[in-house]
Length: 250
Image (cartoon, rainbow, N blue to C red; front, side, top):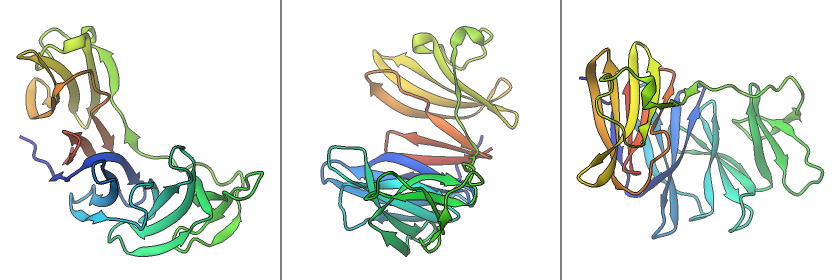
């Protein structure tokens, strides 16, 4: 049986995850809605090590993780409480949570192969510039050579159960929908089942007809859930019960 590199439960809901394509570091945004407190955690997808957890900013709630670039995590703030616009960047070391720099006038546009592309939220029209992720200093105006940074994240396909040979799935799926992905000789599937009148979501890793790994992701849920896992390079990443992060090497 396969065993997780990491299985770690947080005290609040895992709200968002971002992966550093260059260092294979995962940063999680964890939200405690009762206390209106957002915190951040970091995991190495290579070793399964929990680098840190519980990192907070001066802003208790209106902050989030935007992106990671070369071991720098770019955290953002919200311009308004009830809107999606971002304003301000705090950069921290993605491995240690040590402060790197901050700029409360900038917002991230996207990551390029050369670094973060940002803009000053006070200026119109929007002017995109390339910055140094390690210092926050402007390097030059953005140009066509700053192509978007590709990532290695692969999400499963949403398939009807009728696409599978009869008997090839561990259980008959509720709703006739299966999330499926083949990787390194394994087939990873997640599906919903109806057990004792309640809806459950499970994940299976199959090697031919042999089940190498399985886990119960959610139970007593009210509706079908979206895709339950992603693959980044050779790391399988999924969230269980909204609070537990699991990483397996495939």
